[in-house]
Length: 323
Image (cartoon, rainbow, N blue to C red):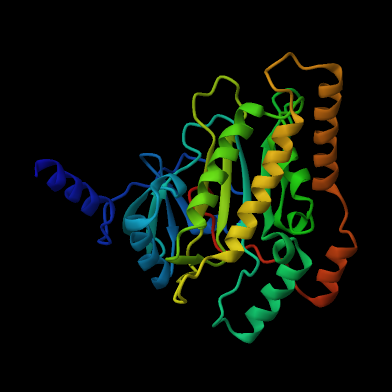
């Protein structure tokens, strides 16, 4: 009885929707690869606060009550920000403890707008879904930041370039390269995390996640004890599944694409750790040269289509758990 009471009290604390007193950490840097950095502030105690609309304010506590905790950032409640006179959602800072955080944001699903979206939004996001890898592969890259310890370079792929990168296997390999080789020690936890999510989505019939992302994070510092993380973020457009035996088929498709890409990469690596060979070093270096080329490339024909159409790739809502 005591244990159940304690568990309920702890649950009530974490799920409180009442304003709480959180101190802003003015000295902390924000890690941002997608979304809107101005929507975030860092708080003391390894937490982030993001501005959310009324629907998002309701979704987070509901989701946190029933969704597997391993798949989402910890939700701490809400607080009032007097500077902008708005309520903020308080979440776990997923980059806390990382010395050189590498971050990849992947928007999930084959359709990134809600069914009741207005005509303009449906047209804009439908165009993005069709032109990117979303429609066919169930996901698209939103942004990436990866650090190479061997060269000291940091590669940043912004959302304008990311939306044109449709080779999932290539951008996953790029993200997991340390500049010399693919990080097998990071690849394996990511593969397991995606596999676990896929198994859950195959049976869950409660939520459909529209415009949501998967955030992948690891520390490029070899001495780091902080584990790699893969978390679902951005729940502003989450809707209930109402049809009988319904599933979130778009998200499922994206998870299967990711599992296939990670599995293929995993199969291509040596079965056991070994010193990097010359060919591996050459391969790793070529990956980073490719990343530099991608990051600095001039707009290609696909990006010209965007400009001529007067559209911009959709960045989606602010990133959860990292900014």
